[in-house]
Image (tube, rainbow, N blue to C red; front, side):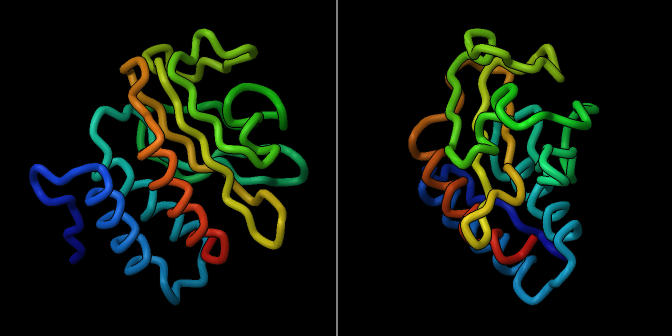
Length: 159
């Protein structure tokens, strides 16, 4: 049985260090990318408070397709360049304080108010995005960006 969780009262850098350690432990040596995404989506949901959706969209034949996640049902397909996830699929992290102010935002869950989406890159190509949604405005900051980008760097070879 796995029991991964952040220490009570941990700072954001400590939470992300523990998250990265847990993700590494669960994905190292496991060749199945879907299993790895599923476990990491669960870790994200466990480690990050105030998120109502944590998970992945996978790059499949030139569009993003829903992958493993924790949260309410979501959009299944997202074109590249459309919405926050589609913008991140072009290769650049999207940290959005207010999704309703983001041009072309796709409202899969009307409760989401802020979002962080980080591309997962392998051999210079985006293979997936990690998507975090929150019902709080400005939930995510530069520490969140750095933590999820570090996670994405590890996952590039594991999903």
